[in-house]
Image (cartoon, rainbow, N blue to C red; front, top):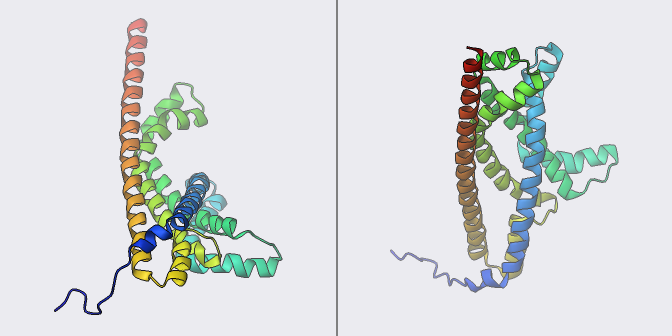
Length: 245
């Protein structure tokens, strides 16, 4: 049996012909993913703190946000936001920001649970010890809890950034010319779907591998920073005990 039963004639030169189109799509995809991820990280932390709050209404509201946003398919959410909400409210939302808003709101729900798991993994005794030294709750969080939780959070954050990069392909349905939409336009002009979609697939693989390498380097750096910080704290504590003695 032939490996090419249809006798398809490959024309990889079409990828070179549309290379600038694909490059523009890559840049816009990275822009959508990066902006959405930064906003989702900030909002996700707020939601996570609300989820851990002792105030019942705040905790319930945060839990409801997480449950509802994670249950909605992203494609449905994008279409509802761009076409439905704008029609009802009369707002004229730019397609780029509509896509960013949808990605931000949905991924913030996933990141909130990641933050919560990372923060709760830190022993409560460390928080109590930090407070006993005279640190405020805010400073104890920033100086003691967060640096340790950040090391735990980095790997799942990377996975979510990869996910948000791939899901950025869905915003093309509302007219954002990211990589997938640029590929579709090129296919409609060249009638070469195999070559152009293969190129798009390879680009996504390369971007994903690059993000994974960057995450590994960031994780190692965070581990070294935490180790140095811990040694300094131990040394400072030992000196203070020696002085007291």
